[in-house]
Length: 373
Image (spheres, rainbow, N blue to C red):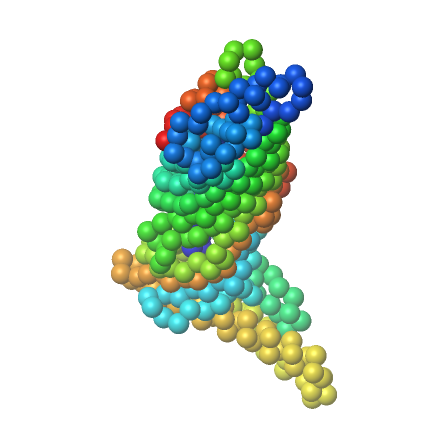
């Protein structure tokens, strides 16, 4: 099955990485007393952040209060698919969890986002997310049928790759503070990704704690920051939608495969019935054997219903649609991140970040320009 069913999942939770790493910083120590005093004595000329003059009076050096960044993002992640139901041409959907097993479910995505941001308070940055994405979902799966002993064997297998485009938008905030160049930033945001094949935009929540250190260079206003942290993804698990049949099945090959599947279901049903009829009356009255027989019949009935409906839809491909619903989640909610930023001056900075150590890998590169409001 070509999983346009997973559209949106392959990219939605990766559009929320933090913007360039700037923060309100207070120097400490006797050797920095002159810097601290000069910051305290300076008049703060901007309206934002709120209480900016108070923070400056306490010795905090503030970044420019507004910014605009452009970021490129790439990621690859394994997926978990559960509670999947499929129907054809508006018919009642069939839950196929017991007959369909996935050996590969992997999403790749790349996106370009624009992020305006402002410092609302000296230690709280808020921002928006606008992005365009290209993504793909690779899926490998098999259809499995039971015998009388409920031992499953694969009767049909396939793999596919679906590519698609999407638009994303979101809102985020980053509480952050620095002391002596060391900083902590707790980035969090919610994003919606609009994919035409889904009934509603996919919603994602991202949390990314970062801990780092800024190192000043000889040239005024230039510095390098490095950090480590984590990246956690939570998303609305349910996906519901409808798509044209020829976007789901490779109809040139699937007609014969579905026919073969129907034949194998019939053979499996014959095998189960032969096993049951070969039992004595006492064996048939055994609750364990009854449960095995009923379970095998239930699963084979589901497989038959699914394949017969697919066969009927394939007879009129041009006018047929597939309806679907499923729960999905990342194989790992957390991954580890390392990053660095080069600040050319207080207006301009370059940033790169890499995430790994789980079933998800990602890369972010960005450019940010800051100014006062």
